[in-house]
Each structure stands twice: as C-alpha cells, then as structure tokens.
Length: 304
Ligand code: SAH
Image 1 (cartoon, rainbow, N blue to C red):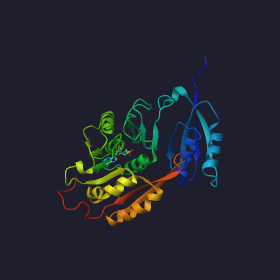
Image 2 (cartoon, rainbow, N blue to C red):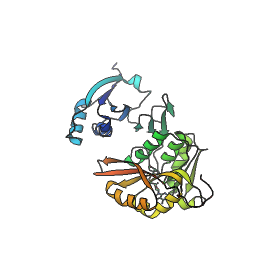
Image 3 (cartoon, rainbow, N blue to C red):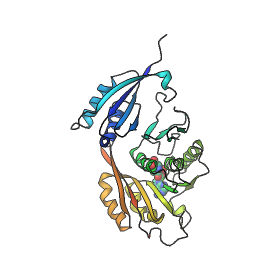
Image 4 (tube, helix red, strand yellow):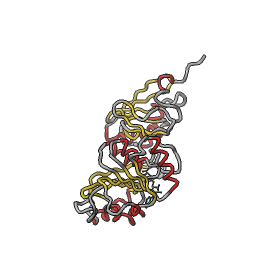
C-alpha cells in the first residue's frame, strides 16, 4: 500500500525587514500556510504534489521583489501521519504572528492553545467579516498580540468578532464589540462561544452611540473605511480614555495623509503605522495606532 503523502516544508531565511514579503511570496507560491519561527525565518507548508517549493518560491519572489536578493531556502518533508495532528490539508488556518493563529473551528491543529503561549482563535466563516486572512484584520491582531495587555478594548465594527475575541484571549479583562449588521453579530456571538469568552466579550447592536454615555476604553479598535472614519472620528476619539489608544485599519495608503491631518485636529498622535500591499487590489492598506490626548473623552464618569 502506498504510504500517506508527505508535506513539504520550505524554510526561508531572510532579513527580518523582508518577512512580510516572504509570507506573501510563500502564499503566491502556493503554500497552504506559513509560520514565522523567529524574526526572518519563515516556514511555508506545501502539499505533497506540484512544483518543487523552492522553484515556486523563486519565481514568486522574482515577480514580487525583483530587486531584492533571494533568501536562503531549504526544504524538509514531513510524513502526513506526523503532521495531520498539527495541520489538515485545505484548512484555512492563518498564522497572524508566530504566536497567534486564526483558524476555522474544525481545522487542525485542534484546541485553543499550544505550548509557548501560542493562541488559536476559532472563527466560523459566516456573515461577519474577519476570518483573519485580511491585511486590515491582521494589522490590528498583530498589535493585540504584541501587547497582550489586560486593558479593556472597544471594537467598532466587530464583524466576526475576531478582534474583540482575540483581545480577550490575549489578556484583555473584557471587550465590547459593536456592529450595525445584526447578521455579523450572530456570527460574532457564535464565535464568542467557540472561544469560551462569552463572559468577557459583550456584543452590542449599533454604532458608537449605542454605548452608554461616558463609556471610555483604554484601547479602541476600528477596522472601517475612510468615509466612516470621516464621519465617526469625533465619536471614536470621545470613546478613548485620556491617554488611551486608537488602532485604525481599513484605510488605503492614499488616504493616510487626510486621515492623519484630521486625527491631529482631534488631538491624536501617531505612535506606530504599517502598510501592506494587497496584490489582488493593486493597492496598499495602511493602518495606524494613535494616542489620544490627555483630554480625550471629555467630561464623563470615569474610564471603562
Ligand atoms: N473587526 C473585523 C471586521 C471589520 S469589517 C475585522 O477587523 O476583521 C467592518 C465591520 O464594521 C462590518 O461588519 C460592518 O458591518 C461594520 N460597520 C460599518 N460601519 C459601522 C459603524 N458605523 N458602526 C459599527 N459598525 C460598523
């Protein structure tokens, strides 16, 4: 009898500044998933059939980063029976960082946590946007993972609930997810249970004005769009506790300047930013983390 197929693992050693390029090139080369082992070292997981992973990576890299030297590549094989416990073919698990994954409920690896502080967020693909694959979602998840703070989070436009759920799974005492779309909220409610955080994630139908007046948060996340930011920025700022932070995503690189000018007028100061090319869109997503001024939130009954 023919043995079970092996997985081919392509390990890529690059400058850590090129890590995001490596992940994109692995994706373009047909990897089913990738894992950042340490800064600059990324492993891509390929099925047993098809073009050799090095060749596929080389052409993807050539197309993506023509001026940048090809990283060092090495391939190892893993027998399916060893690996199936850690990954099932076709599962759309996404490694957001080396320590944070977003995966469908039934996808291997099983469970919600692995050794080494690795957290797996379970998201049932449904009506709510945010299964972890999108650059805008990943930008805000990366922030939450880097901080692993217990500070409460407000997630405006929660979609699948992914950010609110991740915030709590990564240490936040509690999170509130808001959405104007009730179908998204059904999905978020289901996902909240799958992650065992129903007690600490509150879901509210509506927008920022649906919150109790004066409720403020040390961290406010919003993955929206330029038009919504244009209309809602004052309300978002008003929900930041004094000195709290606002993480925004969903803006394109060309919208950055206009947004930042407006943000400065509301006393927000840019702390950190990142950009990620979206190859299918032919554009670049911009995200930023901003600190609210000491007077943010205005007079109100204390911080949330
Ligand atoms: N937070 C998720 C989903 C972002 S998609 C993620 O990061 O992946 C944006 C979501 O915002 C959608 O579910 C949409 O219904 C919701 N939305 C749009 N405008 C809104 C508003 N003004 N108030 C609350 N939710 C809004």
